[in-house]
Length: 476
Image 1 (cartoon, rainbow, N blue to C red):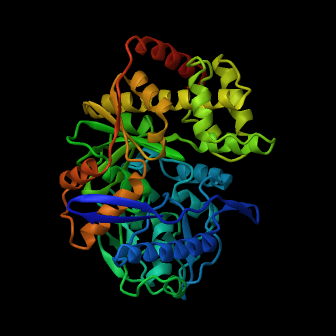
Image 2: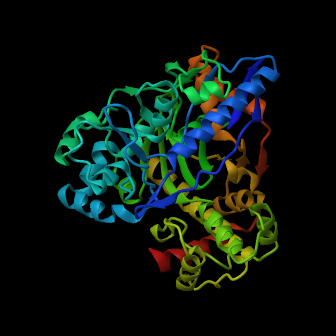
Image 3: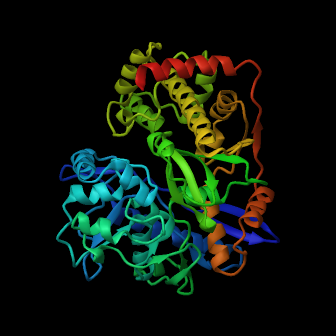
């Protein structure tokens, strides 16, 4: 959680709270402990309010962004009926098959422009059997947290676009919901980023010291939408990699691109800030390394990601390669075994040490970014002159350099806290302090935060060509 201030056209960022947000199994379902997360958020807001007062300021507003697709169900009184299920829970496989047997996948894609991923909200709802729930409402995670903070239910449009329940006209797909017996009352009015929902009324937040004047403002609440809003690009010929637990690789378009090639290649059209479309592909991210580190820690090895990346940089490149877009790597548990099995299938060496697994993951992510960006250029015709890596991956110099080499395109890395910065930009817009102008907002980001540049190294392209051919032959 960050406290962000705007003064003389520059942003200042101060960390005020940080907490874990891992899932846990409840009644056989991998779930989010949302009450605990909300408690941490309320305490964090108290810390932000104290930090603001220390600067002789008042906490003006709060905005919430998070991962997409997951939701909570609340009853008429607003009570959470069960913990929200985690998108990495495997329960949706049968529902995905059932839905795509009833409606042709290409037809479903044409309705929303959203790639058919097994964890999308539509498939979660069908898997959870929420057909007879006319007295319940569905709130995506940021909307649910906003509701807890200010008591107002609203459905922010960038996150709603990921559900597979929104039409390309940016309206709820009533026909699709009726087809799968999903009550229309599950969802309500859509709102744009930058809208004030109300003021903080949560008793725990107020008790923690949050001023009653603090506004709750909608932001581009899918964290990738916020991160892309903070890309410090000077022109439109760029690709982005929002690199964190997931890697979202894409470009901005003026409107959704609904073509068969895009559908078959797995590209999705998610709404972004400023009314634009984020045309992108989901790639596994540092979730892979988090799981590997967790598994080694159980055996007494406690190296962190930065240390392992330094060790991995000393190893020869492209020895260990997997398909970092594979659904085989989606769920928790035995990540090392799954990575090793894929390496064996590609004819690569099988990693053993923590540094070798790290090298496998970073090389494989760079290869996946290359495939995604080249596919984007082929499908859209967009010329990519610069790749902006934002989020936690911007700290990983090895990944940034490998991405430049693999794509033969200059990489600009930073800001690291892009999602929080993009979130803050929309709050400042909602407060009337920034115009709804993406060029001006991105200029504010560029002047506020330094970035690093990585130039492709000569002679690397042919080696990445061979690596891509090897992985594609084994896994596609």
